[in-house]
Length: 109
Length: 118
Image 1 (cartoon, chains in turn cyan, orange):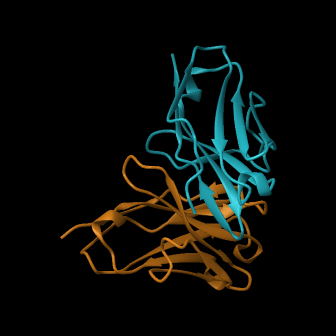
Image 2 (tube, rainbow over the protein chains, first blue to last red):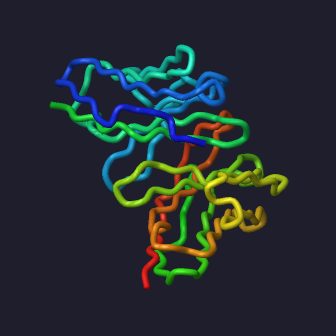
């Protein structure tokens, strides 16, 4: 199972919006609505931000939203804040297994 | 509150095995699947496998098939991940993570650093 494809880095200024893409195939992202997104700060465990493509767990800011079109999922962060600077990973269900993306480093300028 | 507490850091020699534990509290282990994910230094998250803690069924990533064994002891509320035939490339932080039910991982352990070095 190949890793899902994410941009290595994205950046934005405080208050702006950014979108991180996550490309897969019809065997993973495109085949199921089980895409999740995680935020990971340095030295910390990942934190679930989005599940089932677009659902937010309790406690996650509504500045974070998810969507999917075909084989590509996207995470959008609006109203960027300094604390959003972190690594972001997508993951997808794929026939009783899970595949992660390569990760995207978000820099808040 | 839900917590996953993992065992401490390990240093192993190439060819050895390591067994990491993950003690769950605040919920019933048998009611949720548990996954194991690793992260080599500076690298991406990598899924290793999962266990249905209720019936013991497992599924492993092809990358680790034959080297990894995931088990659970519901009476101890603990899941385990054992990796054998260790090599230097297995040096990583190993995480357990609870599946909320839709293949999203809502709670994570603090991570266990496994260092493989001669």
